[in-house]
Length: 172
Ligand SMILES: C[S@@+](CC[C@H](N)C(=O)[O-])C[C@H]1O[C@@H](n2cnc3c(N)ncnc32)[C@H](O)[C@@H]1O
Image 1 (cartoon, helix red, strand yellow):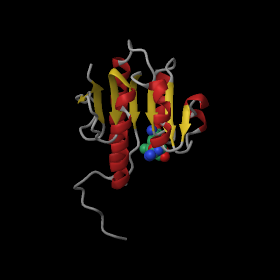
Image 2: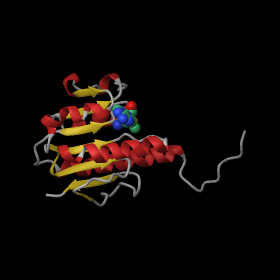
Image 3: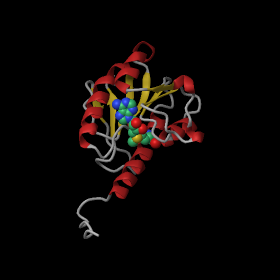
Image 4: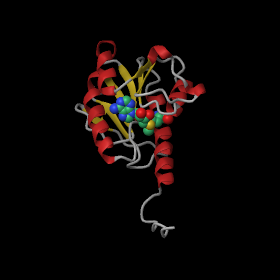
């Protein structure tokens, strides 16, 4: 067995914990921010469906558009099939441009992994594809830092840890 790694950086367990804790705090903040703002919500990265389940419970009357390559969600975290778009986001999201342009009030981009190259690609993709569909004042949350033209970075709410989740708001 190799010697234990010195505790100079967070373990994978801690990184996952910090990301999820920060995501939950950002979501709680975002739910309050959009309460009087009608419009759809987007989840990029269904995964196991944990975030979708949280979104659906807190926003039961919203249209929640969900994207992933595959549907790997738990049986009790399944999106409405009419709002689930499977395939590469590079293709599936632009295909909805006419339906979503300028309307989305909250987008959660949760596409990161422990693969740096993949993270660079998905961060670039979200940075490019999200701005045209966001409403003025719309909020983008992300597990990776994004570069969103026309958006301001928003300070994290209490409970979210710096560098573990990112918040942006479209100007206007
Ligand atoms: C971190 S997981 C999402 C976790 C999820 N929010 C949850 O609560 O379980 C990231 C997901 O993004 C998906 N993904 C990453 N890049 C993608 C792409 N370019 N197109 C479609 N799906 C992608 C992966 O298939 C994976 O399921």
